[in-house]
Length: 115
Image (cartoon, rainbow, N blue to C red; front, side, top):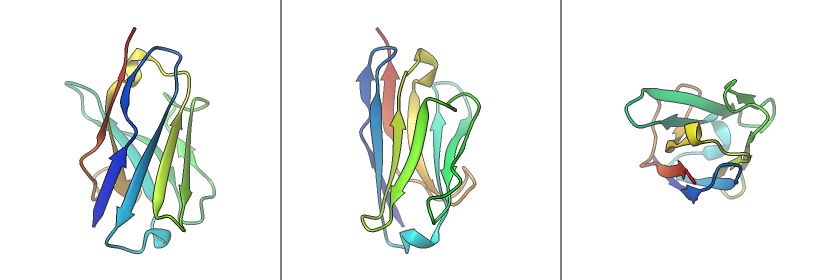
């Protein structure tokens, strides 16, 4: 299982970023996928999840209305569109196979929100 996240970077408050996660080594279209994040000094946190059919996305209260999770099963890729970013969104973001944040995950991509 390989999960390669990308798209992170430094952005000002109110800005946007789009994260991508390229999956390989398993049948991507058969699995629920999850985005999780870990802020400096804090525990790993569930952010959003999406089932294999890309229906019924779910979001944490802290990102609902600002983040959108999506997937392209033809490209084996999971996405996270992040709008109206806040300093408290600063974290390492991971894509995770399965609906638990403790599933298999890649190396993550760092998002820093700062002016």
